[in-house]
Image 1 (tube, helix red, strand yellow):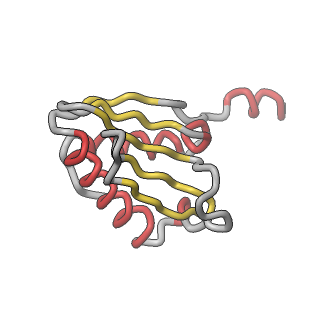
Image 2 (cartoon, one colour):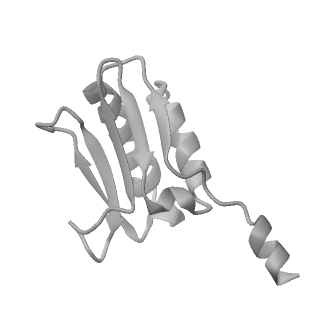
Length: 119
């Protein structure tokens, strides 16, 4: 019975690609500000043990935000959201997307990429 439950447990979507109708920087500014407000400043339980590192001024032309474990700032990110181009293509990837929280993360980021800034 336990094996059956383990096999049917819902996991996240994995890496996703989204399209925005706006330039990369404008898209990532909105996504980063909203993620910080909705996930971190609101003290959402799923994100309490993680840190937020926006890297919006990018020489590569790919602004991004990183979610890292709080105890290792500057360490390997567990979630990366980055945009490129005009209109932007947004990539969302990292180990957190394969967890049960990945589905809610994907839904939030999809809304924010499309212009919604609500939590």
